[in-house]
Amino acid sequence: MAGCQLDRFRALVLKRRSTACKLLLTIAALTLATGIRWLLDRGANGVPFLTFYPVILLTALFLGGRYAVISAVVALVVTNFLFGPTDWHMAEASVRAGMAALFILSVGIIVMTGHFVRLILLENQAHIAQAEEFNAELQHRAKNALQILRALIGRRPSPAEDLAMFQAKVLGRMEALSKANELLRFGSLEAVSLGDLVATATAPFDRQRFYCAGPAVAVHKSAATPLVMALHELATNALKYGALSTDEGRIDISWQADAEGQVHLRWQERSGPPVSEPATRGFGSRLLRPHGGMRSVVLDWDPAGLVCRIVAMGRATAEQAERPRAAAGRKWFRPGYTAP
Image 1 (tube, rainbow, N blue to C red):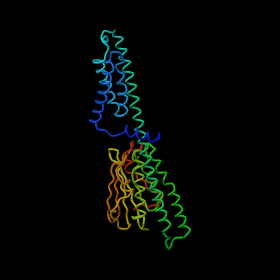
Image 2 (cartoon, one colour):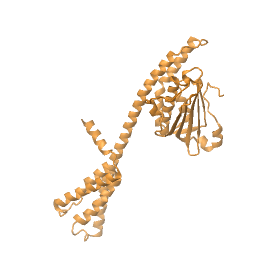
Image 3 (cartoon, rainbow, N blue to C red):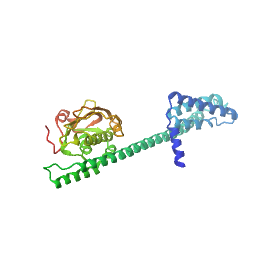
Image 4 (spheres, rainbow, N blue to C red):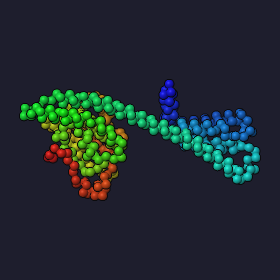
């Protein structure tokens, strides 16, 4: 019961409202507070701010700190001209200054309290959304893992391949696949080497079938998790339908950084079966779209092999920042595959 009430309260606080709607709600709340205060005693008995403090707190909580400040300023003007004591202007300057300071202090505490509670709810909602996204991704990855295992077990050794070597190869890939969920850890780092990220994303697959090259660059944490999920999804699809589904197929992965700090990555499948754009899109297609720090994803369904171009938010490594020309020419190769 408490959880349901908290969910309703959170939904009400975080409900999307236009600027016009927020202004109308602020005006309505101030009008209601002024009317109630006028009906009570027109301020004759003092405490003119009594009905305005709740309005300031609620506007800070439901509308944000900006509208709470507007409410506080309007409340100050209204109470000063309508409900202020008759001898207010005759009081000593020090008294007026002290009362004004106390009002500003109390209103500031109210505004900050409501505003920070709102920020906490926003952050909590973001964590909930991220957890739901990760849970959906884990479920999707579990299904992909099962399909990969079926593909690995279903493939037979070539006539020239020893059965023991074939079994060792399959077991090695299954062990690498069991560590695939470690890819989610990249989202907790400030920046990740793109070479390490690519190596980890493709580790559950046949390393001899990948050719990877690019300068020493790092991707921002906001792009790390979306990018590694996209690469894992591309490799999974390649194993099921693309270049990795045949013995001759291979995948080229290359990247470079531009002057604006963005990383341009190219995924190209070669020597696989003819490919075509799927008629339907499943959950995996959500991973191959711009989100987070992954700014752009373009899929080219070339019959000769799928080409995917990704633009992600990058952050240059210290070595590249100090020696950009040298770093731009240095390549990173995956061990086990000879560059053509």
